[in-house]
Length: 423
Image (cartoon, rainbow, N blue to C red):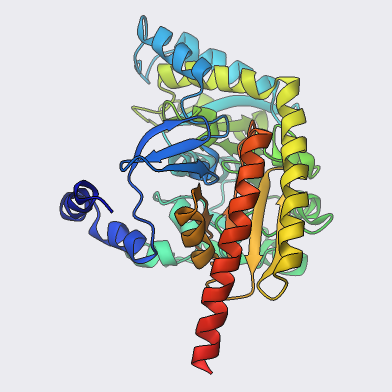
């Protein structure tokens, strides 16, 4: 590590976030991102990494996609954030574009936030208003953001710290893929909504069992609850369809998209709302106010992002890259069957499962040392989040596979060695 980076990391601990900065250093990741282009990141010391984290899918189209850079630059010639109180050309145009690609014909409105957590809060408030009930059901080990209501739907790791636990029994969690538990939670007809990540990202991408998500939607209909699809990390073509819930045959009542819709260029998140759930927008349109939600420059970038994602070649690339990487990963798994034990995949949504309770962390470290950035799953560190971009080149995919093979072997030797020493 250079002297300049060492000094900078100390400044980061002093002025920004001492805990997070030190945690990364302790995990062997001293990353300070400098230049970035396409699917490549460059550390401040000049070292290149292939980005397979994508900040949760924010960089689906790569860093600083040339068309998005251009549309943002052009937008600044006339627009800025705008004023959230008033109708705006870009805000309405994006809402129209989202309705055109919504996961069903019943969607009518779009409400905006500046980030995914805020958008989840809007979705939950929308469901509560429409249902005139308070209770929300989510899954065990869920993650939907860190804001006021969103944090209560997720794992208590993030709520206890700030004394934000649910004290009123209004937020209930049930195990993923357990329909009996879901029905038990809904049976009292006192639930406003079930909120689900189509494939739970921070939980390590466990895949929904066949028929599970449609069955949950039917239970919602049976017991008068709404279905909120959190598509922040699984939407925007990552499954090979515009929305993951569509791929599983579910038409939600409310849907949230964020991260990738911004193109990584301007913060924005969107809540698509069915006509049935959108009553508050007519009753009191000032009911939710967000100064930076639906910023006009963000809307301009988001419209271009949607246009790029819908190009036929993008769908083709998602399938090709997903298949290509899966074949290579299967070969690597055969080489290390005692350690690399599973691949969870739908399109370019992937989780690599390792035979150690913290197994993804040493793999992450050795990938980092070998020029690839992929992150462990916070709520299941046995699983490495492996998230290639929608337009990753074959050359980069080949490069990734070579580096993964090296990193898995080094991590396996490190983990198995520590196990032997323990015994």
